[in-house]
Length: 122
Length: 107
Image (cartoon, rainbow over all chains, first blue to last red; front, side):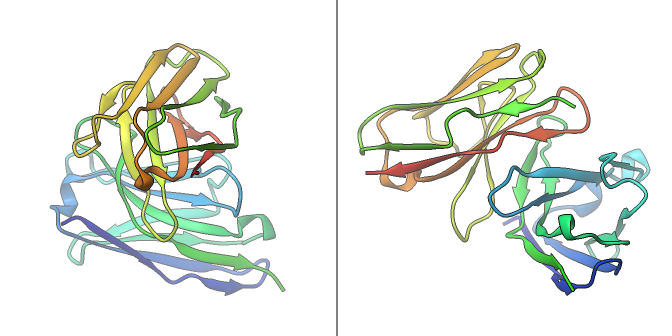
């Protein structure tokens, strides 16, 4: 069974940093692109970025809205995905999801975690 | 960015009825459109991709149609477990973008 479990959320002050983790299990982690998506309460989900699989060199792409502040990485020995968030702002308050890209078509996520809540507030 | 508009934010229907949820793209996205279901306390679930292809495990009462800018998710013969939020997502170009969701309530 495919499982994705986010951790590391909580309260952070504006200007601060936070790293989210996502533990993956039930599939060959290195075969898959992995994504981060966030969703402010009551709003549309927002794609943040992804990191490619082993075959594509683990390169990353980001939404311009967060490029330069957010960094996606992965530890393939531990089947872990990370989202490093810097210079956080109130508008970064959201539930953050990790997700796996499906094998059947690119840029569609076929498995999601349950999310980690991040609140940016003083 | 491609804006995805789900004009109906809320929809209520009874079990056994059929419902349609619409999604409109701000430009043509061919059929690069996916539908997701989100239920409270549960992970997002991919229902349909490529506009009309059912993801493995999606019940056949779900169907997707449309191409270009206008898309529809239809659920026929609603089951009580179909309540939840439904989102469309375009993947024609990056940044990937989502609609704001349609909440389906079962009467």
